Length: 110
Image 1 (cartoon, rainbow, N blue to C red):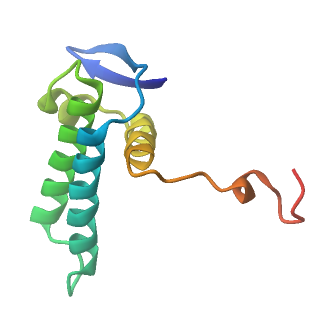
Image 2 (spheres, rainbow, N blue to C red):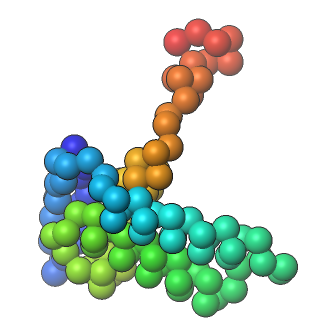
């Protein structure tokens, strides 16, 4: 299950999605990833326009992925804590697997 919390009309609202990522989600995530690679590969680093495009890409992905709110509501109502939910959904849509090593301490033990 995927859960995100947005602030809409000054009220916190939770939204859930129970389905796994679909082909459309993967395609949107690939486009977003392509834009980010271009943005960070640019000589001199990202521009203000790059950051605005990234914001729009993230919001469009979230609005499409959850399908229960609009792009503008994501842009204006996503607390930083909810970015993890969006990034997790993007990673899952791209097939990114969490490494088992992430759960281990420096000694290699859990």
